[in-house]
Length: 164
Image (cartoon, rainbow, N blue to C red; front, side):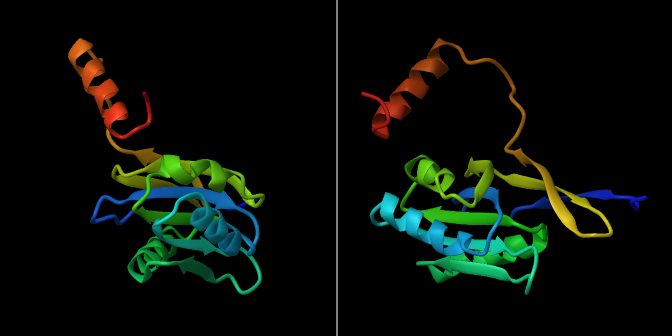
């Protein structure tokens, strides 16, 4: 019979409100493959990524082209402590610019969040270790979009070049 488990909530430290991608993968090759996917998908991207190895040496593997972002990813993944989790912090790119490339990496199992919102990770803790149960991304809605908000949304997407 398995022992009892508990639940913890870990707030992702993101003082600059950077865009990030948080997910789950399954193999040490993840770090190099994510690095390649990011640099090939968005010219000029600055990023730091970290991956929690779940077996073997069980290290936080890391890569990136911005040392501060690499350190931020490592620090956050150490706090989360769940095996096979990865975290990417982005500058000079939005998740929409790289998300399909990240999802196409063969080792990637799932994406939990792609956001610049405050993010909390819900972690299950057992005798064996820690696992991600889900995320809390941002805040709950306070109303329903009206015509003015719809027009502002449409204008924002066109200003960013996502719609014609």
